[in-house]
Amino acid sequence: MRHVPTMTDSDTPNGPENDGAVVTKTRTRTQRPPMYKVMLLNDDFTPMEFVVHVLERFFGMSHAMAFDIMLTVHKKGVAVVGVFSYEVAETKVAQVMDFARRHQHPLQCTLEKE
Ligand code: TYC
Image 1 (cartoon, helix red, strand yellow):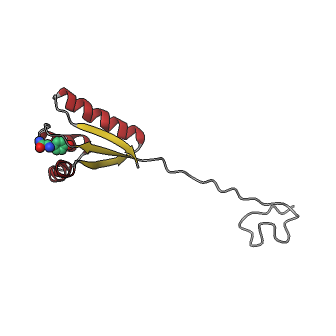
Image 2 (cartoon, helix red, strand yellow; image 1 turned 90 degrees about the vertical axis):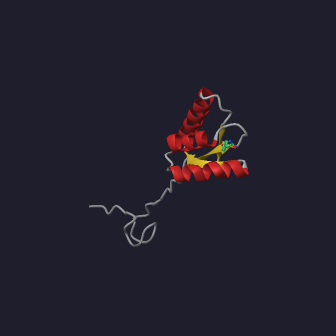
Image 3 (cartoon, helix red, strand yellow; image 1 turned 60 degrees about the vertical axis):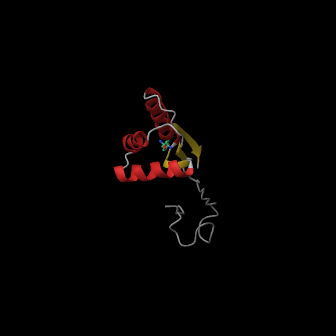
């Protein structure tokens, strides 16, 4: 029976004893999906406790972590609160914006490609 060369043969590709067959190997480059940073912006009116609640409720943070991130936003003006796929990031932004609007707070949440 005719020998079919494979990449496990020590003399492939195209070494001796492969009947002149051309062995090619195609490398498929996999792409990681782009990720998006969700950011919270400071303002002068949204109560601190409300922001802490938002971080616990929509970003699954502990109270201590939520308080810490809230203070960072308060002091620096902005902070990344999570990194997600586009669909998840967009959903988080919509949930936060809707929740803030329903409570009549001007809290702003945005997303940015990483
Ligand atoms: N600066 C607000 C205050 O003093 C608190 C605050 C923190 C508001 C973070 C928004 O994303 C924010 N009440």
